[in-house]
Length: 353
Image 1: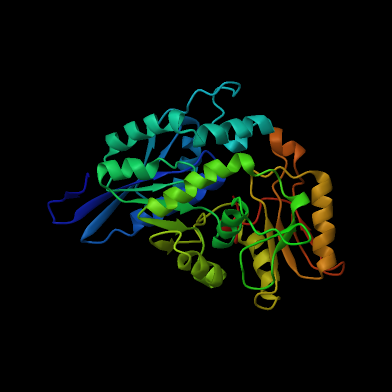
Image 2: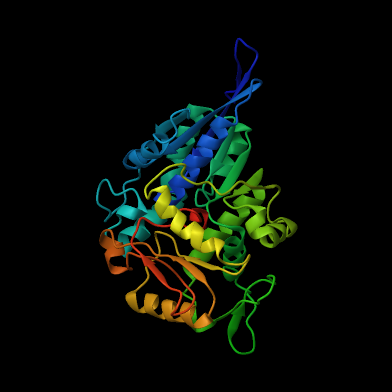
């Protein structure tokens, strides 16, 4: 461990953060690093270190520029060579095809490719603690070898973790009408027809390792807060899936476009609604959603009669040009719609992938 005592008697703690190769993961990891660095006190200083591959450095730098007082260090490690993936494509947002996106995810979760470079990185940085993304399932073993705590950081919420955990189980409950019932969530009950579920078999092995790592780690941090997901936070901690849980969200960018006036449109609209009445919809920046699926979702949301806030990733390049429309939408009925061009919603950014 690299903790040290300064001449003033203050202890310095080094925390190494390892985000996945996706902007929607790098953003909250960077904001968490800033929060950790800002938590320093006269008795202890936190040196936050965020580790990314070279092509992802500009993303971190652009975020840190908004925090003039932030003392976060950036270190790099090489992105693995992946057959068929163009050189320099190291982020899901830069994937030109769905196949390239899959190549990045497979590389990120392949221990033989990633563990050696991560071990070299961790030993060189000699941190006092590691905060790792979920796909890097070997991080707990590396931390254990070095005798330091490892915390996994989930960049979305407790609800999605519970739902995915259940759907990834081989023995997920199948009802008589051939539907899958989500865990015993607070009402309303969630039931999904099996015909509408993708083939999850290829993911079960990876998520099995993820769940094993979560159980072995010192704890789990989640980018949410109890005021938003109290019941789901309680369910996750009460099931014994993790040793300790920390709800540290929302980790949001402190300053960005659009302007505050633009943001206030959404806040003002939300302020007109009663508590717990608005449906928030976001599939994140990596989901591939067809025009037909968007149309059906829009019709379903409007038919529900519920007010909703819907963040849709705009068509930027490659994968996303095929995937969606460039809108952020609020609505609830034909008499209460709103249609706005991006930039996207950040007031609820923690729910994005």
